[in-house]
Length: 316
Image (cartoon, rainbow, N blue to C red; front, top):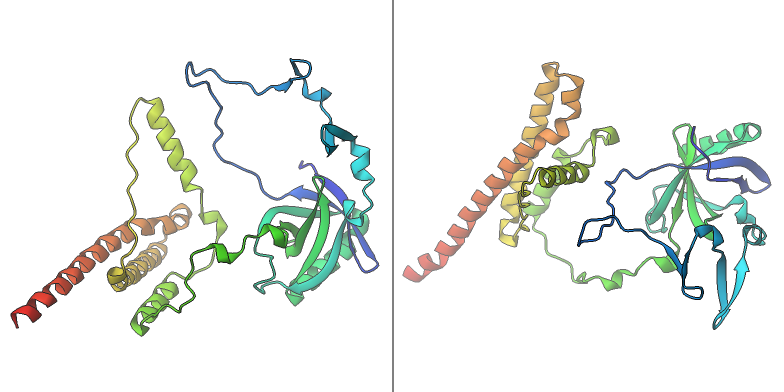
């Protein structure tokens, strides 16, 4: 059974709902050990005290704040619990906002947590969940986690609610740091229409269970090759689409997406197994590769035509 990492209450108005907090996600990345390059022996991280010139166990460490040069005050767990803020043991709802409205800072998320109500608070919890879902609202709240007050958003999620911690405004870097031109970029109607067709042909229903961590699988392939004493194959470099090739690339992409959709529909019609149907989004890759080759071929032809025009004008 999952272990809760925080216990407190949701508070809004005069309503208090006792809840527990659980991590909603976990990492499945490949783990590596740090080795000494000379003899490949695994290194150890030790806590060293320069004053006593010895390695000490973690149990002998404490947390201290340097309030003056070389002078510290030690804080214990009870000191953190004594912080005079409601949010130390409460999810304090500040306001309700439209769930899908942009520009409110709720796009910059940190971590997601499931909420589980205590038996005594189940009715109030369900009432809040239903109202948020029906009205399309998100609750903006504050909570203290890991010795720091966090800004958070609370949303209905299937049979429970999801708390996602957000970055504070001063943690979000300004767009002015990016090299984005202020001048409006000229887009031709034909290019826009072709882009709209591509978006329409690739639109569908997002099913998370059909997606997998391809990088993890590919990295394991590299690791297995090195274990077997083989040199991993070099990765193919993806070239950016040139301005002159944009229309050709869009046309080829639309054709590829339509072909992939037809293949998916014919596979279902033939009564393909569930496993094959789930793998269909990946089956589009060969078609995309063909489309890429076709785009390159069309682009080359376009460049050849453009190169020929000056010669034609010259001879004329």
